[in-house]
Length: 150
Image: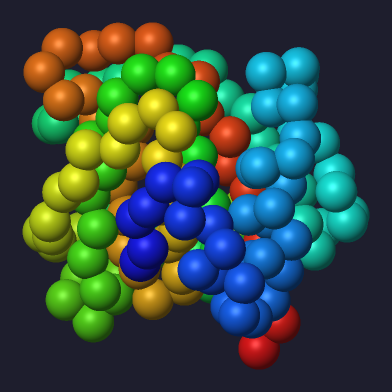
């Protein structure tokens, strides 16, 4: 897992997969003009999901992971608490291949992600997004889905 802000994107230029392309997209694209939903950048290899929702109370959160994709989650508006843990510390539940969704249970740590910051979750990173910090609040988030190449 990586947690940082856009001003430090150049530090990650050496990362594999399409991560440098994804991070540069966050710097260069008109994110405010993107429609809600999916926008393909390179078909299923790299695409953007724009989401707007209200954050949830902690008890409503669910642990998840992905096998085929790396998530780059960039917060445009609001503050969101996200859980993270290594998969080795979690109990695996059902995997849904067509959604690349691995359900999990267990416990982890949490970070408060603020507007202008991003988190990168790799396949070995369990995560629990969408949680409120104090009270539920509206969020606008850009999630880049980067297909794993190895």
